[in-house]
Amino acid sequence: MGIQKKSPSKKAQSDSLGLSPLEHVVIAAGTPQEWRNFGSSDWGSRLDDIVRGASVGGARWITLLPHGGDVLTVAEREEFFKVIGDAVPLGLVGTEHLMRGVWQKSSGLSVIIDPSPQGRIRFAMILESLRADQMGPEDLNESVLATCVMTPADVEPDLVVVFGPPDQLPSSLIWELGYSELVFLDLKWDDLSASHLELAVDDFDRRHRRFGGLDS
Image (cartoon, rainbow, N blue to C red):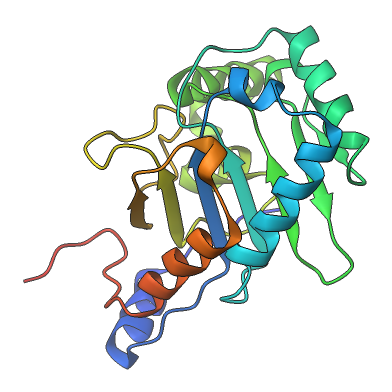
């Protein structure tokens, strides 16, 4: 399933009309170690909060990533997804360190859960996976890489909500910041709530989007 990247003409059109389509929200919060301290009931409540708060703008995709932390082993990652799978119907995409959990709701909204705290390591693993599939440098382009990074989402993030210090970007985010608006909430993982995410979406709705550009 290929990524439909926002073309410059679409960006310019949306920008000039003052439109702020919100299709994909990324949330960066906590560490994999903090996530593993949650039991199934904790995850059920936390994911309900995330959906209620981050979907108020009509997003089709929500991706949850850590702010930072230590990389989980493959066994720890599998155990982590089993805990969440006891809380919500969870599908899995990818394998080993690239495995992601996907909760697809009947409303059409999908929540992607990826405990990868180091975006550079994950990106290197994606490139190695492509090489193992016999894909050469001549076959690589922005669309192919975006598809692999965002999978299974079919659009890049519009909004990244960072739970953490406003002077520190999450180490989990490499590609995702290219055309995204950022909202920083100086709060911890345990403080995340639906109301905080609603405020972040409201902030996004009031912005004049530049799609990674700067005001002239």
